[in-house]
Image (cartoon, rainbow, N blue to C red):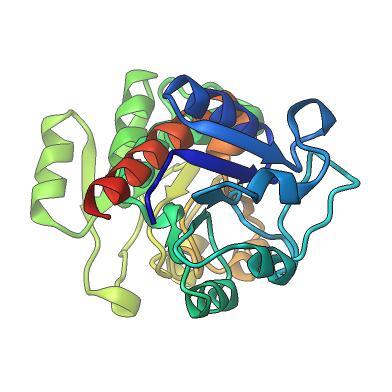
Length: 294
């Protein structure tokens, strides 16, 4: 099937509104539905009728049945009904696609891609995630970050950016990482460094700096055991930035009298315009790559 560049954007929040506008600036023909009456076709069938690619939101669904349309209370579209309308060869892109949706779409010979898995998207989202984590910390802490002992668990895309920004704000930052190169890199940036021992679910952290007031976790592994948490001051706040199972047990933290925050979807929560532009840039690259290889 020849790709003409016609897109259908179905559902989503403020990010998808910005994404729609940016995609059009990049030269894509886009029709939308489920983004509010001002920006949408009256019927979703009109949006997808001539589309070569259908873009679903991030996350694609809230209930595993319908496409998520938070901006249009009257919009309701079952994914199974959408599938019946799409012809083989249409590209279907969505964020955090339910596995059953992917299986059903591939069975109908659609070209399916979960753009949340894009390395480019994850790298670009690291910046608004890091800034969002700092904004959330400032909202929750009764003190300034300047001179405050904080710890960043993990030194990947998000952890390294976050540690650098916290350091620039004058916080006393300790980086906890596994790889020697990450520990050395952190030290060369003027940060304190502590080693994470072990691999995977057997990873351990012997402790955290005395008086630590904020812990930012970016590692999806229970590194912060109960003995480690027990040595933190009651004034310490734990922020979970990693996916499940996360770096600590929330029930254990509560039992020890520690406050914790689930910091998910920060780009969309705090910076929808930036997040929308990031989505547009990433999707445009994915679609053009597909065109070149089709």
